[in-house]
Amino acid sequence: MIALKVVIFFSILILFHELGHFIAAKIMKVRVESFALGMGPKLLRFKGRETEYLICALPIGGYVKLSGETDEDKIEGKPWEFLSQPVGKRFWVIVMGPIMNFFLAFLIFSMMFFSLGSFSMTAEIGNVLDNFPAKESGILAGDKIVSIDDKTINNWQEVPNAIQSAKGESLKIIVERNKKLVTFSVKPKGKEIKDLLGKTSSMKIIGIEPKKIKLNFISSFIIGFQKTVILTVVTYKGLFLMLIGKISPNNIMGPAGIVAITGESAKQGLFAVFNLLGILSVNLAVVNLLPFPVLDGGHILFLGIEKIRRKRLNKKSQEVITAVGITLLVLLLVFATYNDFSRLGFWEKCSSFFNKIFKLSQK
Image (tube, rainbow, N blue to C red; front, side, top):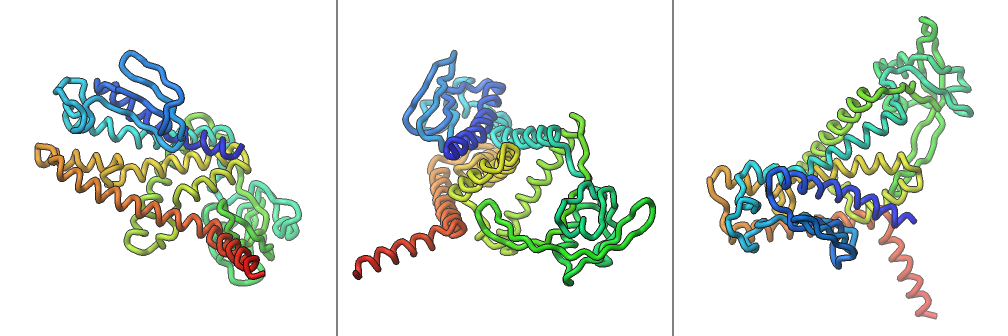
């Protein structure tokens, strides 16, 4: 069942991406010869007026085949051929794939905020959980946190950091209640938590939640847009910091890791799945815009060179650059997969398995 959810999950991401290329091609009057979801043997097909629509056996990708898309095609200089279009039109056909993934993320986040509401960014406590230190200390819902261990709190985002960074066994928490300041001593409870890949870490918990607010349709879209933009900026910043060595490349996640966290999200409920879908849709857009020759960003790079030179790169140059790009991507994929297996404990399981086989063989 989880495997089916993973397939559906990735099919949605791919469908929106390829749909972006498809819509832009239609707008730019470029003929689309085929629109495929999946790769490999064809399971279903039907022919439209110009386009053949396909569903293939392997749910690992998809593609839009444009008329006159590459030098290998039989190019006749027809107005509906891709390479007959000016640079600007070809740019929009290429870039609309990632744009549609950004749009999908924006749509998902907006609908989630509309359905669930949002947590207020003020430091007001919305809920105090039973059997946790905050409630046992006398903190109430409606209290507004003023400071934690003499560290001024301006908004809710500062609350978790202040709790986790506290050095002593107890926290000195000052709240505003009925326009008066009240001081509490709260001893956090240690809690072991697991991330989506099963990695365990320890957190300090006192059992408070921010105030929840209901959002109207317009506010949901505004916050959904903000989250998409922030996530995009954070992703690019993370890639840059990794490039200059400030973040370990061991954080790179490959297909195995993505499948693992998708499966775990599926266990946690529908909203967890959609939240991850939005995050991965942003990541897919960002990765596709990187200037690697086999990605959309690489094609955009070639268009930029063509615009400057006023002519396309020759076939040989494109082939060499593409070969280098593919090699780098394959190496990156191998490295990311190795990271995934390390996080998932695959190497330890292999070692344990072979040790058992060795011991049996010695008997």
